[in-house]
Amino acid sequence: ATSERSPDPAPLTADRVAVGTAHRDQAAAVRAALAGLGVHDVTVDTANRLQGREYDVTVVLHPLSGRPDATAFHLETGRLCVLTSRHRHACIVVCREGVGGLLDDYPSTEPVQLGTLVKFPDGWEANHAVLAHLAEHRVAWRP
Image (tube, rainbow, N blue to C red; front, side, top):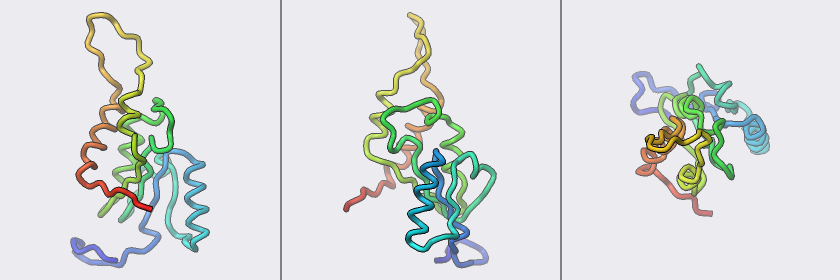
């Protein structure tokens, strides 16, 4: 595959593709699955380790996919930003159904003062904004 927008089209090779995850165990599972398919040159790592690097195409596991709850770690704005900004041409976000509802069910751990407008964590807002943006590009998985 080549990019039709590149001034000097070059083939897309495995070393220009990355998979981003929130956890090391997720990255290890993806690496093992790719190795089982004979794919060894795709970079698979966590958001923290992908920071500062750039790839032509990235596949991102949404930080809340597979989670029963929305913790501060998974809602951290920087993590979501890094995962969705490492690509030059395409970013594919893999997300399970129900993450929007999980966000809505996320209880704030900050004390609420009567008569004060509640401000949700930035990560909450960022995740909702990303999901809303991606909704128009959503492709449902069908086994």
